[in-house]
Amino acid sequence: MMSVETGSGRFPGRHGPATRSTAAADLAALLSLVARGDRAAFDAVYDQVAAPVFGIVHRVVRDPSQSEEVTQEVLVEVWRAASRFDMGKGSAMAWVAAIAHRRAVDRVRSEQRSARRERRAAPAAIAYDEVAEAVEANLDRERVRRCLGALTELQRQAVTLAYYGGYTYREVAGLLGVPPGTVGTRMRDGLIRLRDCLGVGG
Image (cartoon, rainbow, N blue to C red; front, top):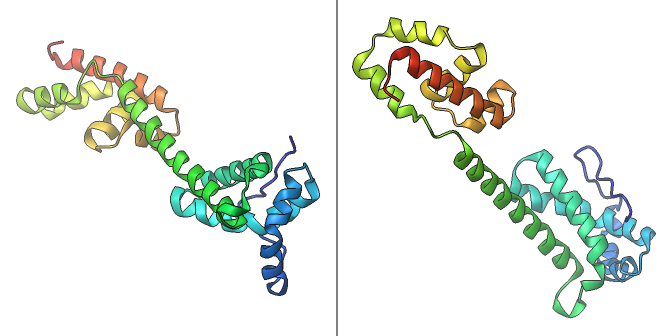
């Protein structure tokens, strides 16, 4: 399988305005050549579709770097699946656009599923509300400050951002520049130490 290079975030076509309509008319013919493994034909297809594909993907995915990744996936699929293009079902560009939109939607759904898995996997043994209610009902600020001071720096930052700042695990991980799993572990350990220091019942 050939390597598809998409560049550093830019997907410019090399066709000028005078040749664009002719190139579009030739796209179906080029795809038939690509289906037979013609790499020069694929280069020509790339020139025509890379920029529009990136635009379609970016409108769905929003994130530029992920849009670049998905665009590359689309181009690889065009190379591999060119033989499945059927002129009787629509234009070549419509076929490519459909692949781009499907891949973009798949990426968004995958990110959403990943976020849900992270939330489910986050340590739930000690609920924030348990600590919050005990602190607000029974403890003074100085005692809380002292107990927070007993945590490690990362534990204290994670707990403070999540509890007082209202950030999610993923957002805390991004703010601290550490993996979400590390945040989850530090949060769990920090809440256990905070609970024990504050004398909250387990």
